[in-house]
Length: 252
Image 1 (tube, helix red, strand yellow):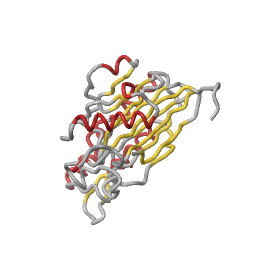
Image 2 (cartoon, one colour):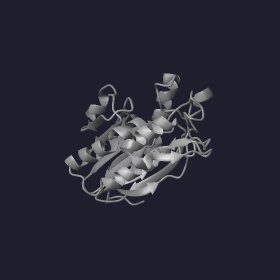
Image 3 (cartoon, one colour):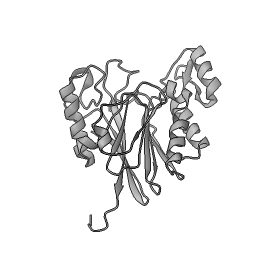
Image 4 (cartoon, one colour):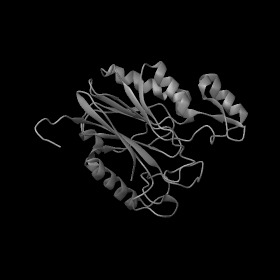
């Protein structure tokens, strides 16, 4: 169910988790821990998977925030638990300052980025695929975090498709490289490719964000994760970040 988990310490703790495709209720092409409603899976099974995720993370299902992702640059600000009762909005990043709210981003090759300033108490989750990366979703999200008081932002970059496996037409590589030169790459067979993860890492660096962890796992090469490049009809795994207040009255 969980691929990896991290903690960013500070005045508040920021917890980060990335799921895998195992231990859920879905079957067939979505076997088994699919968290997306838009891919054709049974909605009741997706709900069961999301509830199981919330339980494992120590959150209530009502405090786990998903968005309808469209490869754009809109950022959703979750300013209260009550806001989670509204219908999911179209956005490709989420920000909150509210402890106990889990911000989820779903991927199946795109690069999930979890951000946290634990002193300021500001966290964000970003879904930058190739279009969002090129359109500036990273800069937009970091700027909004800073507007909320963030200054010392740390990033954890989750698993995504590597440039060895992200073959594209040369014209598309040239188009993206004109915006973000670091994105230009070569596939395992020597054809034009794009390095989305490397590009967003460079964008984070330019924005003054510290990268605490940069996953080396390629989604297309790992059977533990969903990959659209490997199998187009497939599920989505997720990156989740949430803030937790320190409890000094209890002991481990």
